Length: 152
Image 1 (cartoon, rainbow, N blue to C red):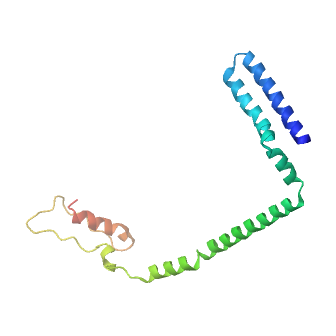
Image 2 (image 1 turned 135 degrees about the horizontal axis):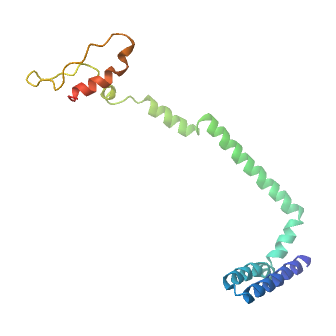
């Protein structure tokens, strides 16, 4: 009974503030305040406040919330274990099966690092560069081979 009285008082106070706001020619803000003020009154009229008060002071309801929290904790912990293991058993089997299959053409994706062949009738557009020292300067040899292959 006291919760309904408090909600009704809040609604009346909110409607009073909305009336003062409308008097100051701020109609949009007054309409918004009136809408907020009518929410507690609507909750009282539908009986939702009584239900909430009965639920808040019911030990059975609180025990139900504890059971729901325990169920949520179980779901969260099993999901964390699945993530740590790498998915469900079915997902792991599918991943293992996909890893076992060999590529159709394993050498198809390997880059060709051989000497670029140039037809004899087509002369080089640039003079040959100075010979490289053999050793640690092999880092860009594959890039140079690709550039020579395309005549750059």
